[in-house]
Length: 494
View 1 (tube, one colour):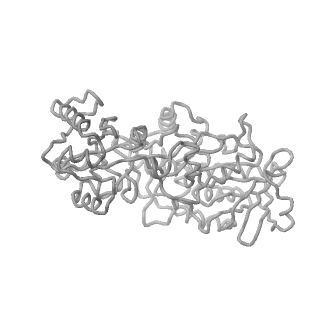
View 2 (tube, one colour):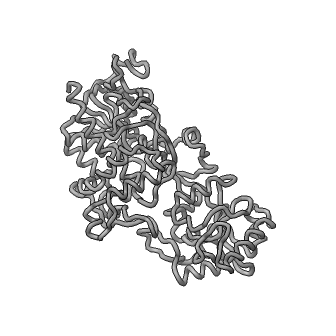
View 3 (cartoon, one colour):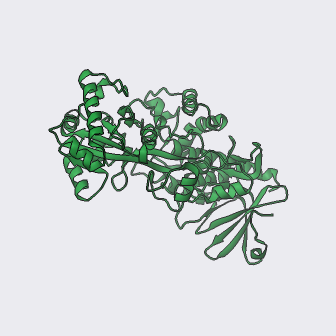
C-alpha cells in the first residue's frame, strides 16, 4: 500500500531498485549516501532541484570535540562537558541519546572528512567566552558537499537530479519499501529496503514557518531565501507513520537584507553589533545589551518586543571609541576589528532609502525618524545616561565597562534589528540510530532521517556557545542514518 494512490501510474512509471534511497543532496543527504555505500549498500539519491550540494553548499565548518586540532591547540573541552552543556542549554528537553551519539561521533567525522580531502584550517569560538568548537574549512579548499559527491560517485552511488519524491510506499506491515517520484522523463517507482529523508527542512516556506513557529516571514522574521526548502520530506515521513518532533527556526538577531551579514550586520557596520543602548517600539530598554555577543539570545530578546524589533542607538563618540580601542565583540574569521568608515556606511544606507538604519542630530530627531514617542525615548536615554555616570545599571545589570552615554550634541546612529533565520530545525522524530520513530517511540521499519528535518536538539535557541552545530549535526546524523539504513537492509532480505 502507499500513502497516496499510484495504482494507475505504476503501469507507465519507470522502475528502479536500490538497497538505500536517500532524499536530498545537501550535507545530510550526501553524508548518508557515502556512509551507506561505504557499508556496502547500493545507493540511489533523489534530488528535486537541478543542482547538488543543498542550500548552504557544504557550510563553512563543523562543531566537534576532542579532535586532533583541538588537542594541538590545547583546547580542553571534553565530550562529557560538551554533552552536558548541550543538555543544560535545553534544560534536558531534547533527546539525550541522540545528542550523545552526535557528540561522540563528531571528532571522527572531522577525521573522516580530512581523509576524503576536506581541509580544515583552524578551530575557533563564535564569540569571546564561547567554546572553540567550530572547525573552520579552508575557504580556498573544495566545498564539503563537492568532496562528498565525488566520493559518492567513486563508490557507485547514483544521483538523479530534477527528481522529486512524491510518496513513500509502505507494505501491509507499515514498512517503507519504496519511493515514487516525478522525474524529467516521467514518473518513477523505486523499490528499496530503506529510505533516508534528508530534505533540509521547511525554511523556504513562509506558510510552514508561520504554522510551525509563529514567525511571519518578511514581517517579524527575515530569513535566508531558499525557496526549495518546503518541508517535502517531513510531510512524507509523517504520512509514513513517523511522529512529529519539536520545530524551530535557527534564529539570530539581524538587520533585514541587504544590510545583513555575519552576526547580523555587514562587517563595515559592526559598531551596531556591540553592547550599545537598545530600545523597543515603546522607547524602553528590554535587555542587557552585552547579550548582543550571542546572536541567538539577542534574537530571543528582540523577537518578544512589539513588532519583533529593537532599535540600537550609539553616538559618534561611542563609534570613535571603537575606532581607537576596537570593538568589544569580534567575529571569528572576519578581518575587521573596528569600524573602517562607519559614518560613510550609515550615510550610504540612509541615502539608498534603507528604512532600518537612521542618522540624526538629536534624541528628539531620532525619535521622530524612528517612529518613537519623543518623551519616552528621552526618559530612557536620561535613565541610561545616569547608569553610565554612576557605573551601575540597576535596570538591566549590564557590566559597567559597556556603559557609554548617549549625549545630545553628537551625531546619533540607530539600527532597527529584527529576527533572522538560517533555516528550520525539526520535523519528524528519530532515535539515536536516526531511525524514524512513531508516537510510541517504535522505529518505523525502513525509514530514517537526518539533518534539519530531524534536528530538535536545541530547545528553541541555537547554541552559538558551541558554534558549527547545525551543519555538524547534518553531517553526523547523515553518517549515522546511512550506516543504520545499510545495516537494516540485509535483515529485511536484501
